[in-house]
Length: 425
Image 1 (spheres, rainbow, N blue to C red):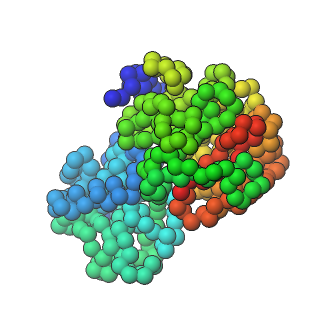
Image 2 (cartoon, rainbow, N blue to C red; image 1 turned 60 degrees about the vertical axis):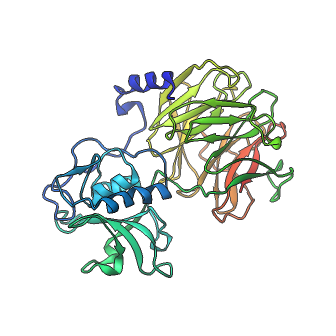
Image 3 (cartoon, rainbow, N blue to C red; image 1 turned 180 degrees about the vertical axis):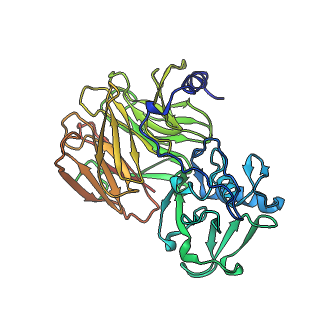
């Protein structure tokens, strides 16, 4: 059941202008008279990315139009989406409204052709003459070797098709730009989570016994729930919007289960919102942070909300100034930038690492202030210079194998005041 407080906050935020958040790139104006297979006039209504979505769900959604043999049309709609090529891809990605080839790039990160995975898309927008031949297709899988022929889904006349690229004619593949939807969930299905944690920022191996807690497709989180100075791992189940919180995860049991947010929507984050030494939970939906201010042990719910960043940013939280209270922030994968918000609403922008890295937050040098970091490949990079300092000081450690079948996390596992690395697989 959706939280009453969150429903109320969403209603209140409906009138907030985009000036309340970081700037969102303006959408390109749709061209009129686009040649088939795209609409004559793309939807004039505002469009935005939808909820985080798995690759399996994208393909399942695409298959529904194939099964229904949805007729191609530049004017018609089916289940709320325009029935042309870009409307079909928008439907499969579960976006809010129908995009067109001229603005699909705003919700797609460019990738190499050989990196295409199920649910990615290939977009061709003829910028010189957008009325002539623009098209987009949804990637399914390789027919044989990576980089060769592939299966795809596309909306064309007379109706939705699932076929090989080689079964089409007259297309120049180099015109098509491989893209990865910014809201696709690339977290691997790991089954039961196994946590491997280190108490040393310089150790490439775990210093604590491994233990199991939770399972995919939950999201691992960590926090100091009881104020004892040590972080313990817990999990968030997006499907039910439930936080499974434990003070002793080594026994595999959750001591508390707290529902917060809307099932199927939120992205979790954790922080101490009132400076009482205990972490609390939060969920981000769209560009709005919802912070639960009552303790996780309290059955009554109180919450506050803040609009910050773009909907496609990843939420983070940390004590940026060392005052004992955590503030929110976002990481923008497309640019590799961190936007860190202060209590007065101002923000510090820090570029760190490569685009599309995994963002990290923690106190790496025991100075009482949280800082940023990233994981690239199997290496953790910890920025130790102040977030307001243009000079960059970094330490790093290789931890895990970086094969994509791991989830990185950081926390103060032993209560010594310094956050260190861990992995889940």
